[in-house]
Image 1 (cartoon, rainbow, N blue to C red):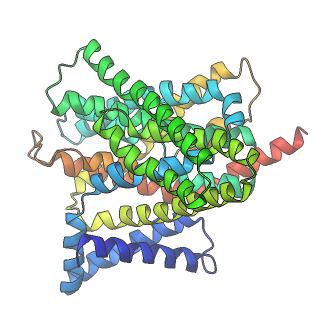
Image 2 (cartoon, one colour):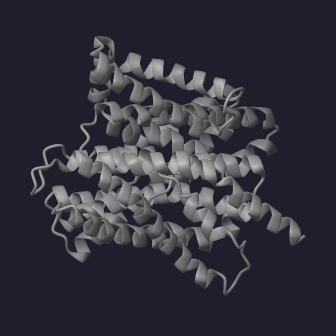
Length: 427
């Protein structure tokens, strides 16, 4: 079996798990698929270790050869961000613009620094002398939130709009900002870039500002083509070209493709959709929206099944597992501090739900983006104790990601119910 066939079968398996979950477990789809994929991965490992099954070993070899970084960062990510951004309500986003901007910029940077220091301390307790730049690199890849599961729960339970838009807006934009921070630190750590303030600032600004500007230019061009085209199929193909060719062009221009896709998605989902409605094309616009919603759901299902399968290719050590478990509270603490501090200021100017910080902290799930960034770390970097930096980063990230999706995702509902009750009591 080659990599393409494996992805095709995993896609079908994701659909099967999602379908079965509707009638058996009735969990949120992402959580069900992630839990199922972890269970399948453990069964494969058992089959290899205990039975020596050649088919399972062959499958593990295929999974080991998958370029997870290439599949997600240069493949699925553009489609996921574009599809998610199309769901954003620009008017609601404007009302929460200061909160989201602060969470995206300030909180992501602060979380990166806090996680960097905490991970350096934790690894030091295990006798692992990891250079601080690598600790900051871990902070950058684990700080961006990817709350796919909690967003679905928030929408399903009809949580207060201000909380929903904060979680949704932050998750989309800090994916892009987190990638820019990670790319900047990666260049310092592995590309020989001199770590001066001016060089780091230049890298950051060229990626972030360049991505936003490129995204707006791309959105205007796509908007013109969609509005002027009388053929529905052509309009749909234009939207497909944005996260495929548009994302690839952004990467070639060395600007943030993630931020470009977010800008395009918001523009097409609001400005173009409004223009389309005025041209009596409501049905086709609605179909395009439904198409991208279905695409987003399928890709997320496939993504989290791939995450679960990733464990089969790992060589685990007790120390790496222990470090990963210790990093769970460290990441949660950094998230709480980086989100809670701005809200102390926000509350001086606007009234918020009492559970806002708790929901943003516990609902700040980590996902495939973090694993893709961890997988992109060179495999030939050896630490002072002889261990491989790549393996350490992937294993620790995997543990944090699985905990956030399964445990945090399953236990966020009570906090949302409290927010709904508080909102109703204030009416």
